[in-house]
Image (tube, rainbow, N blue to C red; front, side):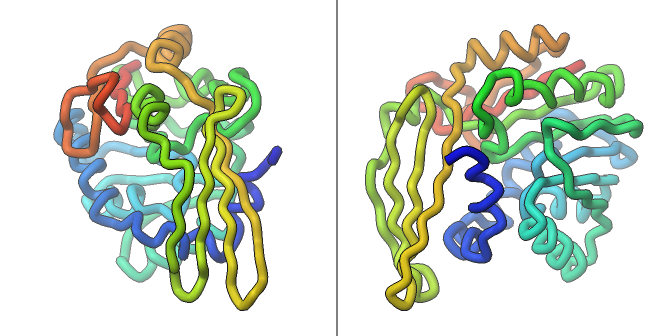
Length: 244
């Protein structure tokens, strides 16, 4: 299951399975961030681990200067295609979040839709956050959108199945070694493929502690994309706006 993200995110079926994650969702979260931070249109935004670019494309269409990077070539090609179709001016590069560094200085860094916690060690998972302090302007923002550990532990759905474009998708979920592990079984034309997702479960206290160690301070914590205040038992998401 090591490096699961390389196999799964580069599978042509990944975007089919998650086709319900639409542009409106990304728009809602982006608007929440923009209305809270009130960053000017001249701002430079970095979308770290941008995937297929839903948030980056929308922010670019809003008039911001947006850079995105991701490890998956498959997802970047999709982002490029969609960016071209929507006439968004988006700059994209392929890179590993553990190794990337920038000379450019950004007004805001986004780390959205649980694109965090994929790696085995805390050192790897928090390395980008520590480095990013250097390529963020003074008073710049870092926004982390992650699942709420407490809510997930209480509401994990162990099994689900659905049909997507003639592919039977079976998803099995469990918590193991302080990680949420999902097995994705795809059945099409009697062929069976298996993929995995494995994300480390971090408490809100641990996340804030690591960001504060990297010299960030907490400005605001939301519990969902509608902008509700965070509630440890009831909030599905953990959206923290940090400031340098």
